Length: 377
Ligand SMILES: Cc1cc2nc3c(=O)[nH]c(=O)nc-3n(C[C@H](O)[C@H](O)[C@H](O)COP(=O)(O)OP(=O)(O)OC[C@H]3O[C@@H](n4cnc5c(N)ncnc54)[C@H](O)[C@@H]3O)c2cc1C
Image (cartoon, rainbow, N blue to C red; front, side, top):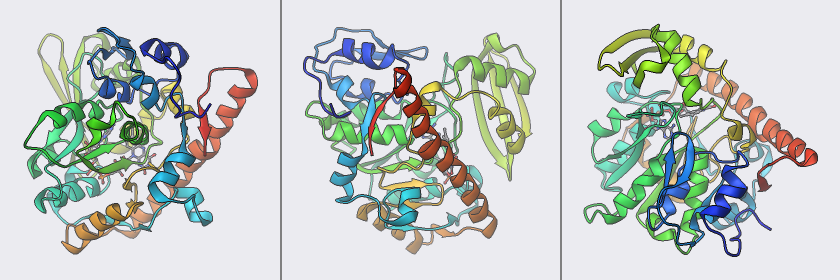
């Protein structure tokens, strides 16, 4: 059976048995976003049924954790497979550029040049979208899960700029958007797993209504680790020299150049603040293991998005129009040679980690009869 095909009689029990209990959940929140009766929640770090299941099967059908039919979705989106060596590396795309935000404030707030934020601000200012759906640091109690933000203006986009190595509930905002008469068009920013779930939702008879207002799907490349709550507590406990059990919430922002400001709220209401170089943070975070299912994910560069970031790659025509429009409007300018060089090195790492390494890990699991996602690609 194809990974995207519906399964007869599927329900939350199917999702639980074939995905959650087998350790294949990516915490993309696609199931929560698709449940028409709001019966599914993430409790701690586990997808859970907290209401009554009506057995529509949407949660199971949209789930990218069980595997993914990249061939089918790619064909529907682009009308073709990858061509040539560049596309085997990066996925189907129409153009790619080394860019950064021209605006100092956006550049500084962003993680790597503020390119995502610049594109969102451009789309809002030009009236191409009414809102952008982005990700904030979480409000607890699980440090590994962020919170979603509906941005209607520049200040809000900047407030949620920068990368957070968190599981994002961004897709769950789609229901709120669907109900809001003032919002007709949105851009969603997500990781590759979010975009996969979003594409599944769009073609699903029960879940597609939640995606009707989505006009742009923007993806971040993803090769850096998403940590568990336990490991976040350990990391932050070490950086801030506080007791890990007593941490209530964390907020990390770039303040200047490559310096991060860590703001940690403790359960007793006190707050501590500390500045650390980005390189220290990245060095420490990489020592922690990745969420196990992320190690089986073969999509490094958001191959099913309209635009993906790293170096922005426009994949669809509307993605290319949006990116070109942001360049023409002067919102994005060429990035530095250093930025291009370091992005190239990161992309090689990401390619080896996911398109080579994860494929091998999936194959190994298949041979051993262990739970694994089914891919068609
Ligand atoms: C978990 C993770 C792993 C990554 N791994 C790589 C990698 O291996 N190689 C690589 O080239 N790039 C990777 N990135 C992307 C990279 O860190 C930058 O986000 C990207 O280059 C865009 O930078 P920017 O300055 O243009 O974006 P910004 O202008 O800073 O905007 C970033 C946008 O992403 C949103 N966002 C932040 N965190 C999340 C999240 N967890 N889920 C969904 N949306 C989020 C923000 O709300 C914001 O809208 C990763 C990002 C994350 C979150």
